[in-house]
Length: 123
Image (cartoon, rainbow, N blue to C red; front, side, top):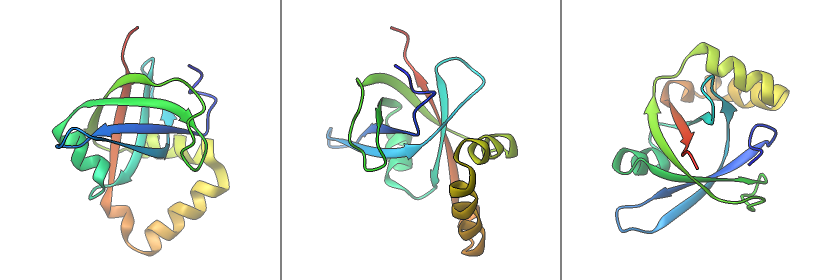
């Protein structure tokens, strides 16, 4: 799977009732192989679902979530954010991320961010 060159991937997480939710997300590669970082709001549904179930799936997708690749099983965990990770997001997404980040700071939402580490399972 060529995730590193994609702009988005769909993160599939499991709900308590067993159903699954697909969410298109921005991501950046982590230093570890087959590992990526995603950020979101700490109160988002995906954060709640990951707290309950680490099992996840990822697939390349477009901005609207249309899947463009094969689903792969993964492990998702909540981790602390860092300036280095945000620098990687700014580098990958450029002006779009900077505008998003500016309004996040302006609205005070930057304090509500949660970083997620997604590791693709070995095949």
